[in-house]
Length: 219
Image (cartoon, rainbow, N blue to C red; front, top):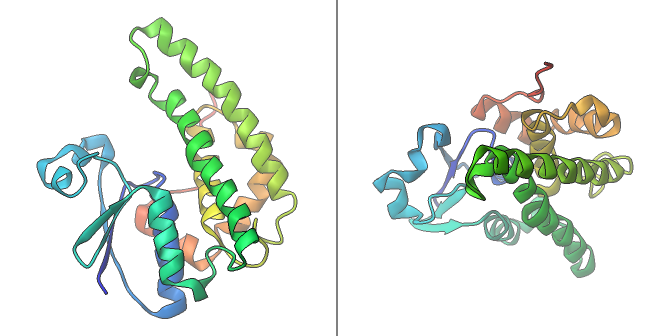
């Protein structure tokens, strides 16, 4: 089976990227990783749009067949490699984990997008400023909720196994800095992410993407 992941460094595509590293470590099955430089607009090239007309990352190509959307990709990977344990196997526990995963993808992620790209939602600098300000308030609330989860991590959010949710939590704390929110305000969350970053799969994905944990710049 040939697996190829198209990812944007530091983007949400880090989640399946880390998962593929976990699969490689556990099974020995390799994958190809292709960076898409979002800031250069590579996601809008004719070549990429031929694979994914939405022009989004992540995109997983399985034996020549493209699959988009992070939840679909991760669900496929978990079902294809259940022994890796990227999600719980018991139906109820898996559903609970997917509920958290969906909240991260459908609520937390779009909140950050309102901060980072307010121009997607309205015209005019005044409107952009209002959108960004309101979204920062909501994003802080989401970070607080995730911090509450991390206080119970043992050592990961779902127990002793790394999951998609841990990788997404890492992405959000990195994005906090880009949203001009100091991660130091979330000490339990920050300490948990420091542990997560030491997991071999996470460390490998971070190294390939060339990203660091701390993105916050003091004014």
